[in-house]
Image (cartoon, rainbow, N blue to C red; front, side):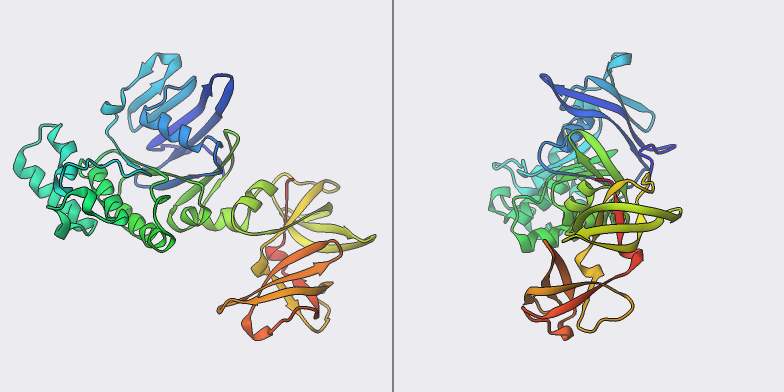
Length: 368
């Protein structure tokens, strides 16, 4: 998918940011329509937070242009830089950043007070957003007397009460425990859908990205590796990096023998001096004769006890762990250990010989 969006509400063009001699963001471009929820996903140091802070105006940039609606936020070439306080942006941080000496309602009201909005309107808007985030009963409590999840809800309420043109999230759920984090993912997305504010979300957590996003941008070393919807990113990664970063995948080096038709071909694996060929999907740009990496998700590897015409590989189960809804298995084939998600009814056990079957629709050759 192209990183450019015609008529985008937010448009980032050729963004460049240095810290000393290190290029933190290396000429990235993307745009999103109004009301969308976009996640910047990647490991620490990939440039995602720097991109977010550049949009917020908390970093000056060394090159490129950032525009929201008809307003240019920053453009070094044009000598333009709109201060952060004039960008009309709401931010939700990892640290909550709420004032301990104020009540929940006072925290939420503060952005409206500094805008000199009349008190009756402040009261109405604060009541509305506290109801939206489920904190009506906590309005008069000191913010520090709230739980971590409630503090994050208060931080979100404060960010949206002024109806900003953009909502920016900087790893807001990182400090919460797993169960609360999973609950808040759904809540944040529900609230964003309801208020309809264009949102950019930064995280290194692939599960958050898959659950919450309309679209995901996967970043590495200041560049965009891939952009797409959650299903596309997970099921059709463009290269080994994305495949390995999003979810779990079996990744094996080999060669594309032939391209049968656009997007489909034949892949060759080699183990212990044996060559095995299997039909597969091809990520864009791969040609016949090129080295590539086979990517297969564990749930798309089928282990069976009886050999038939569709089986491709023979291996041995090294372990099988029952996890209720599925069995997490490992199957040794030559020097490679396949990760396999099997149905509980298969009752696979360590030491068993099995045959592996692959659906060509879910077997993908990607760029190394």
